[in-house]
Amino acid sequence: MKTPPRTVVSLVCVLALISGCSGLRVFFPSHEHDTEPPTIPEMSRPAVLVLSKTNGFRHDEAISAGQTALDAIAKKRGWSIFATENGATINDGDLARFDVVVFHNTSGPILSEDQETALRTWIEAGGGFVGIHGAGGDPSYEWSWYVEDLLAAQFTGHPMGPQFQEATVVVEDREHPASKHLPQTWSRTDEWYSFEESPRSKGVRVLATLDESTYSPEMNMFYFFSSDLRMGDDHPILWSQCIGEGRAFYSAMGHQASAYEEELYVGVLEGAIAWAAGLEGGC
Image 1: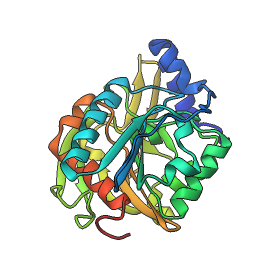
Image 2 (image 1 turned 180 degrees about the horizontal axis):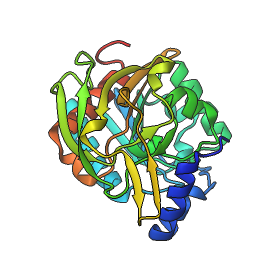
Image 3 (image 1 turned 135 degrees about the vertical axis):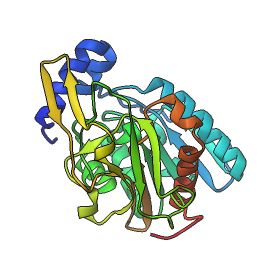
């Protein structure tokens, strides 16, 4: 388990005081793991599994709004979709019934060691993974493969004071199915994540970055705590990569429920799932 950066520890302690139990679970996550998977109905292919289990901070409104958007995408595209908060769904037999797993604002150590092995094996053998916002927002991870290889980036914090800011997203890859519909620059409001270093250094395909000159990437808490979250000229916010025979996509956007009503952002998720399923585009 990596030691969380000092800025994250400080921020989490403050947020824990503000947010009560939900805030405390960021720094003191649950280790409760599901052992009995749910009954999954008959699924036609392509099939999408959406997991929104939270053992850390819970983005409750985003999870609800996002699921509505994901259901609408699946209906539009003719995909089967199954949503659950049960981590035991991540097993060899059930995963074989799906083409893509979406970690929808998951948080904390949600999987047992056996479940982690099942997910890694499935992805490397050709499964698709899509992570949304909170799925990459833990201050530290016990599962090193997940953060170092699958996500390829360790979260360090997000602005506070204000938490939600309008910023400019610079789209640098307009060939990928998740970003081909986007304008070259895209102004929107979100909770903007920063990372220890750019995942570009690990060979991921960066689709979009943040222009840090268009918002204030700092934590400013009650006049007694401030931390600079600048990553510089290379601050990725959307990226993808191939892992073994599988595909992985991550979007650091999507904290607020309103994000899942934005046509452009919903288009990102639709394209990401289509790509991760191997239906569109290559690596």
